[in-house]
Image 1 (cartoon, helix red, strand yellow):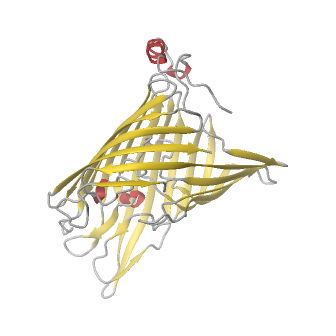
Image 2 (cartoon, rainbow, N blue to C red):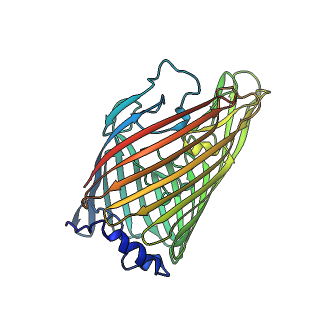
Image 3 (cartoon, helix red, strand yellow):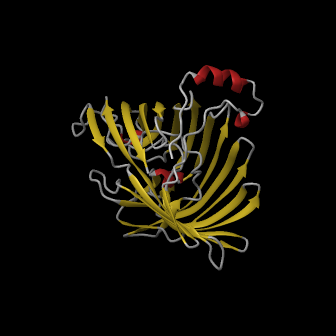
Length: 392
């Protein structure tokens, strides 16, 4: 069903009314959040089946050379002239388009759910269909069991800034991987979760020489989620291991760990803020970064990473909203690292989005990013992106 949208003349009324509210979450004149579309639902006996997803088209113009032309990843910004990359580039694609199926209902053991979702980012240049999520959950006596591929337990999937860009800020963990997770409900929206997860992750290990990289143990991940009156706070922890078996000589291994503390909370009216801090040895595994590299003696060493993200979402009125954010990440590279290795990245984004119906929005976004390498070389890039999305 459609819904009516008020004019942006409501902005002056909203700001004065919201300022008088002690609790922004209950401000009567605050604009409504964009609706979460329920897709198309069918009820089959005790089961519910939902078809969801959207079609999204992106127009992207890069004012500087960058390797990732369809998503904004500052780690691909060249720090020296690269003849293989155009100085400016324009692309239009619909690869973020996604489809999902969601089946839920009761069982003899407890409520269960099956969820599958895919998009078209399965290859670097083509439009290959790929699996994003594929998992099942089942209620058990003291909690919920999940098995399959979905957001890592280390990730706070409720604290992602809203960007038109597919990549989003790079300085916080954001990966999906196979896992088995147990979640214990603590009441009042609070819970604790533990998981065994795929140790290969999305990060890279630079081998010290000829031989094989070993991942002999699963990652052990956990999170504690605390619900507050205005939002939530989450603490995530991961423990892992990586090894290297050289063609000649004894094997080498490294212990990995990471901590991520995040929050999302309402501020005034429907506005909200997001902050995340990430730190650890090898934590780049959880965002496509480098997990471990050889040091000056040729021994494998985990890369220590520190990352910060801050973002804010403002609702001008019922139809218009804006997001702005900044992220920064630094890698403490071991001595002996190649001079061209990425040491520091940051990016900034700001956008405005027009929700002109309950199923369609359009927007424009400006992005800036920079990259600095171990040898002090610097590169920067600017991008302008326009998007339109049609929801099921």
